[in-house]
Amino acid sequence: MRLEFRGMQTALIALAAYLLGSISFAVVVSWMMRLPDPRSYGSKNPGATNVLRSGSRIAAALTLAGDAGKGWLAVWLAIRYTGEGPAAGLDASVAGLCAFLGHLVPVFHRFRGGKGVATAAGVLLGIEPWLGLATLVSFAAMVAFFRMVSLASISAALFAAFYAFWLFGLGAVTAAVAIIAVLVVYRHRENIGRILRGEERRLGRKTT
Image (cartoon, rainbow, N blue to C red; front, top):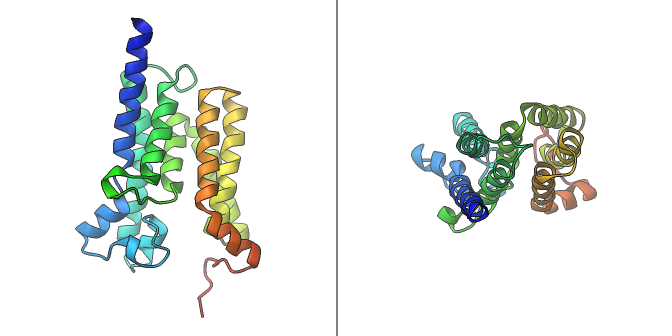
C-alpha cells in the first residue's frame, strides 16, 4: 500500500510539474505586451533570446525570469511537499525533469516549445544552488570566450551533467540532469550544424 501511495504521489508530482513547465512565458509575455508571437519570427523559438529580437528587452527579461522560475518552482514545490531533499528521494528530480519536458513540448501551446536552457537553469538551481551556479559560471565563461550563446548553452549542459555526478554520484539527480543535458544538445542540433560550418551568429556581430 505504501509503495502504491508513493507511486501515485510521484505520478501526480510529475503531471503537475509538466503542466507548470508547459506555460510558455515567451508566448504569454509577448501576448500581454502586444508583441508578435515569438514562434512567428526570427528562429521561431519561444525563448528569451528570440523574444529579444522583438526589440523589447523587458519582454526578454520577463521571459527569461519566468522560464527559469517555473523550473525552480517545480523542484521547490516537490521538495516542500515530500520533505525530501533531491539527493534523498526521487520526486524532486522527476519534478525538474518533467517541468523541463513541459517547456520542450508544452500541452498548452500545441507542443511547440523552446530549447529549455532557462528552464534547465532554474531546475539546477532548485536541485542544488551550487550545481546551478557552477553551470551558470560555465555558461558565462563560454559566452565570454566564444561569443556564441548556443555553444555556451550546449557546453553548460554537458558541464551540468558532470557537476551533478561530482556532487551526487550515480542516482536520480544525475540521471535527470544527464537527460536534460542530452535534450538541450539535441534541441541545438541546427545550431551545431551552423557552428561547424562557421555560420553561427556571434554576440556583438551584426548580420549583413
